[in-house]
Structures are given as C-alpha cells and as structure tokens.
Amino acid sequence: MARSEPKSLQSLLPRVLVRLAGESGRGHALAPVWEAVVGPHIARHATPRALEGGTLVVAVLGEEWARTLEAESASLCARLNEQLGAGTVRALAFRLEGR
Image (cartoon, rainbow, N blue to C red; front, top):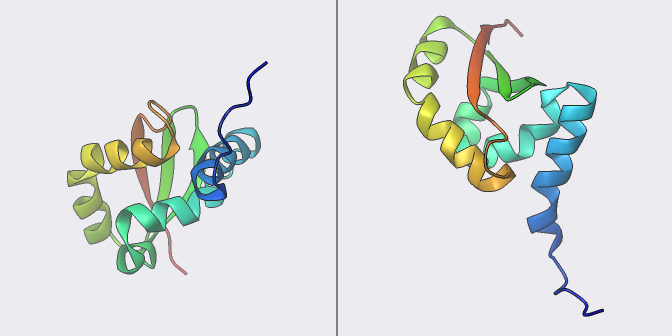
C-alpha cells in the first residue's frame, strides 16, 4: 500500500474544525477560519455561533453589519467553502447580539 503525501496542519485544521462544529453544533470552533475569510475587523463585529446543517449562524453587532454581510453572503459562502470543503456552508444566517 502506497503512503500518501503528508498533509500540513494548516491544510487539515479547517476540516477538523468543521467536524468539531458539526458534532457540537457550536460554530465558534470555526472562528479562526471565519477570521481568515473576513479579516480581523469584520471578525470583531461578527462571530460564528452555530453550524446547523449547512447554515452557519453568525452573531453580529448591529443591523448594519447584518445587512452588509447579508449582501456578501454568496461570496462569503464560496470563500468559506474553499477553506472548509465544498458544500460545508450552504447559507449564512445573521443574528443580532450585544456584547
């Protein structure tokens, strides 16, 4: 049996986080991937909270953030799936949350 090429931790981590988030239902496990996709500024105002089926529930600090991110949701899903695997995030749902 031939050995496959070793994989880097960086390439494995997103899929491990998806599995953890899916099994626990807690999307906060995806925070590192979310921040890598949206950047640190947006990540301070919008945080993944749950992965329910293919929907990533994101807590946002205000309606303006929800509207802005909703307008970008197709692009965000595509970029998340590049990191997490095709079809992992089929939709985003934004929920208002205060800190």
